[in-house]
Amino acid sequence: MSGDQSRRRVGIVGYGHLGQYLVQRLQDVGPRHGLELTFVWNRDADKLKGTVPAELQLGKLTDFLERCADIIIEVAHPCITQTHGESFLKAADFMVGSPTALANPETEHKLREVARQSGHTLYIPSGALWGGQDLQRMDEGGLLQALTVTMVKHPNSFRLGGHLGELAQGAWQKRTVLYDGPVRGLCPLAPNNVNTMAAACLAAPSLGFDGVKGCLVADPDLPDYHVVEVEATGPGGFSVHTRRKNPAACGAVTGAATFAAFWSSLLVCQGHGGRVYLC
Image 1 (cartoon, helix red, strand yellow):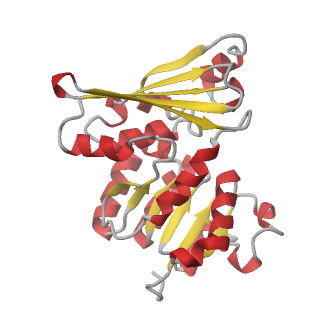
Image 2 (cartoon, helix red, strand yellow):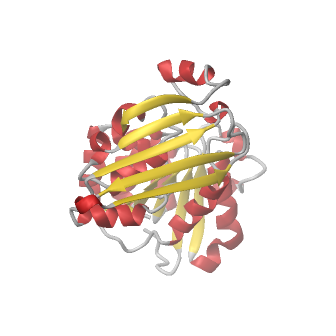
């Protein structure tokens, strides 16, 4: 932990579009929010040269302890959380920008337990999930009976493996349902595309990755935005259905509004103790 309790030291793991955005925000306005950038790591270190000050570049990820971060933010790939998440969480609060990593039952159980034992918080950013806090409250109250998350994007916005990739390539002429079923089965096939669904599963642990339903749709008529629909049902005929249109460049994996949502999530990441917290 940092010796200066008035300022939170932030480590960024990953320097893609989202990582670059967070680094820039931390450098521009971080101090006024009590935040200080302490390191940036990227698999391709050359990408940091000329944009990130040399003293903030972390050469080896395993050397992160030297930077005394108070919170570490992963915005790289689910494998980072699966490999390093336990070490991160033992030393600091940890925000998982790729929560599809937690679709692996062993990873989820291990990180929940480390959070409980260490007193550090495992933060799950809401990202493109609208109404996540409401879902969390419903679940905590035992009122959430079913939850479906539908994500619709242009075929070029997907980074898919296996047969889903083949289906997406064939979806340039008409709207095509690529997957419809439990979110757990989808996460390994689309680890970069369904983090919103994974966040919903973590907001509703009574349903979890096996109980929350995910529907992934490719639509060639959506060139400049993504759509996320959330449908929740409860007792006595209660239901709520939201539809979120997120502007996005053609081929972009992450919608424009999600960047600002990540920053807003970071601003509330403090003081939540040893648990999983949707922010």
